[in-house]
Length: 631
Image (cartoon, rainbow, N blue to C red):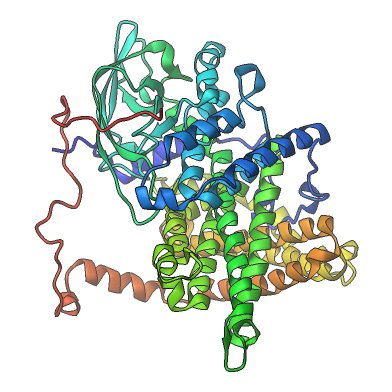
């Protein structure tokens, strides 16, 4: 039977709150944006790289490009494996230590260079990017960089840099985005912890030498307890990789199910303190999530190239298809949005490298927006290619045509809307950060458990803040005809962003005033608020980058901003004019089985094949381990 911890909604919320970074020590462009303050000075001029570091990165990327050009991604797609000699080649180039400091044997390169490397390797096959990012973005190196001791860094980081693959193990069969239900345990025993549990979807877990495991330490005398992070050697007795999972896309991904039974982990392998595991995980993801926008930008760049070449070659009705209005609109969207994807990635990565701004919202928005838009681009490419877009690269090649794997792109990109926080969870996460100031001011007004006297005191306190804040949302620089004129033809878009930021803040306030503590239940309203912020952030990033890039980028930047403005206006309209209440009732009826008749007339061949969630119980594994190491 499953051992997942049963918790109430309030307890789950409390665990999530305790894991948050509660303070805002550094300024944040997007936090200010959600408050109606368009702080262009926080992102303009565009952050510039340090020349020596940039030159070093370019030398590495040139070598990486040369190596990648010798590899055929079709091998991975066909064999469902990344060849061992490829992994060895990447290790020799230093790809497993791109962001690890040189003192520990790494390359010591920037987040920006890391993103460019992921784009390169991902253009060979996305599973290579997943291998490297699961290792460096969320695997052992990043948590140790953030919270590891000097001794842990000396002990583990040189191995990681040389190519010892690592993984991050949090998810369990019945535990996903709600970590309060985590069932894996790490029980103190002398100088060790004894680890038990089962972890699911362990990207890199099949081939990892080291893993970061999240497990619950029981509270006891001398132990504060709580969900904690441990570095675990995968050759430790009691570890069994029971399955290697298969997916819709990302063939070659070494993702599995790992069981821990009475695994002894030295207390010196505890990262941070007991109870700090989720906080470490969330902090790791601040920059770690930027791996996904890099993957998405790479896929979009390739899509634009294929769309351009095909649309010029394919002739229908006497003209290349790209000259027909229906296809031309798709090409314009794809090209402009791809420029925006790279602009958002580059700005976020550069700010991460500078280290002077808080990018938790920016990184989350970049991940959310990039994963959604890249999937739209891939779908448009399928439509442009027609039947050939649905046909596999191998089939195209077999009948003598260019092996263009468009359907593979769709399959491979789709996971990015789920990886490292689904789009729905990302919207809730960003919404929580976006309204943090309001929650701090509102106090008991936003607490569904608070009593009336507490709410009255909170209302009196909040009135002072809002008396000074709300009037500032009435007028701003965006209403001045000549504001931002140093941006030339893009100035009108920045004025729109400034006006929209104030409108976004007002709408958020109206939502809080209307629903108060109930706002957290209005997930679709909050989702639209976040999507608005994402589009405004993307517009800002595009304008700032185009200002740096010069005239060559202006047409794409202008086109993107015009397209984004239409989406923004639609999102504002849907905040209050929507079918949310009707949909909620229909959904409740569906769950109650009142519309079961609509399912009639088909067969469900999954019936009887197994439970929705696999049961598990602690104990030794009855399976033979499928773990392996790259040779």
